[in-house]
Image (tube, rainbow, N blue to C red; front, side, top):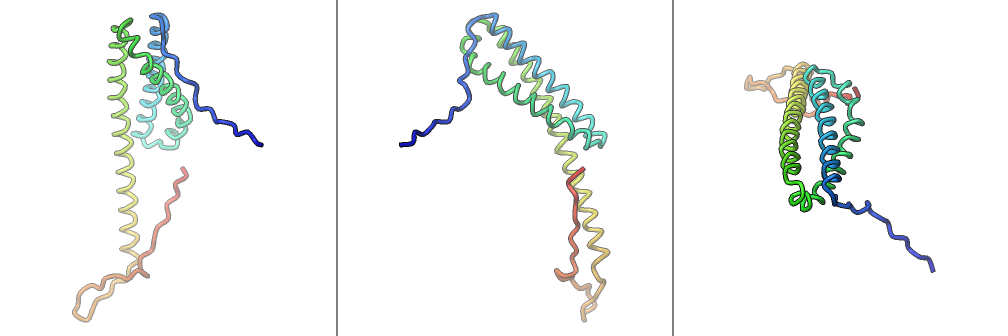
Length: 162
């Protein structure tokens, strides 16, 4: 009889148990947030400057920092009861730093959403101009402009590779 192997998930998170461990965790989380913010600010600058290919090159580094951030924040959440009792000042400082972090992320998301909306508007404008030029100018018997049929609409192709 074949024995089935159970897949193991991620190792359980061990909450911190000493003030020294709590301080080390806080330093790690703060350092990761600072690195991630610096990288995101760089990405925002590149997108604002229209240097999208350069901004895309930061994706792998951003993914790695995000994984480190998630691991650290997961450990902080698991350690929160202990830290609230043993190091409340440290926990408060982490909360304040995290609020600044979230605000900066919101700025980045706004810039990216704006860039997306602008590029979509440009593509739609180009498409409308292409369609206008490709549609024959015909009129009905009543002298009104005839609506183009589906055969007259020419789709445009957009390459997503930069």
